[in-house]
Image 1 (cartoon, helix red, strand yellow):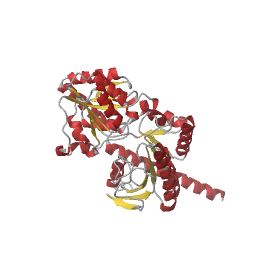
Image 2: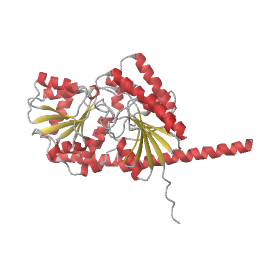
Image 3: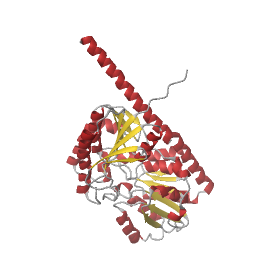
Image 4: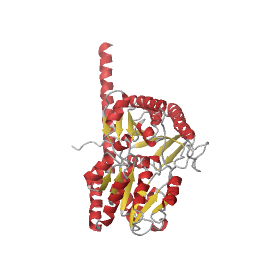
Length: 429
């Protein structure tokens, strides 16, 4: 007798960010739909990263739409703007309030699981708590950014009072979660410390879709890159990415014209970086190309001699494993890591490249020099090892199936508890 197929689930995702904004969460929602599950996303009006509402969306909506089989419910919010802490705070709290109200009014059916995508801010957890209550479903909180640690580490918040408020908000969100998932194995202690109690924290890392690296590359859409050994950095250019150290290493190497730094991305520190390039006389070896769609990143990876990841020397960042690392591992290129802690460990453990401590320009310059003179065969072997490590630990399909199993397990646990409660009620009746 065959085994009965698993019942398909109804899943509600709560996130401040979703399509047409470009986040990995889009892949998760699509992957769940591909597996036959019914997916609804409660999110805000798209405004990331430029800080203004997308032309396709405005204060008149649309408030409900379908995208690739995913039902999307939107809540109003204040756009984040650019380089304004006041607008950013207003953006965070407006979604927390409006998202909670929309969840209260528009979530009218039961779900099997509510999955909350918790980048910064942690306040996205409050609409998740309301949605889980209305949907009569367990809430899974996926922690990508530690609060308040990530706020102080990025330099965004320096006030002790603001950190206390952030800790209080995080504690409330953790208390309202049934299952806490973390992108890094080092997050459990900080989460339990802020929560004020021992909680089970399950490791659910970020992934890379290998299909993106196997599709044909549109070379016509890529800018021409300099010759020589190219050290390629992609992503946000902010205070967290420690470009002081990157520029320091580039300054030490500026006489080696065959070593070229290629920076692909945007952020509030980009203007400062460009000023430093001129000030330090790096225009021949340090190139800021601006922002490009994520679909073009494999093209930049393919032309790289090595891929660079950097973060400031902060305890919170030592625990963090940015999604960029999985993308770099999947690209099959050597990695140069200027991040202390988990990222350095993974790069070393996998054999994918060279890791140095954060905030050490001399060590970073030495690592780049070492890779630049290494044979192409040895660099290719590093890339192969990194790719194999990614396939073992960050396989997208394996992780998605694991998440669905957790959803089903929690649903069964609730059904068992409910049945026991009903029995006790009858006995005591």
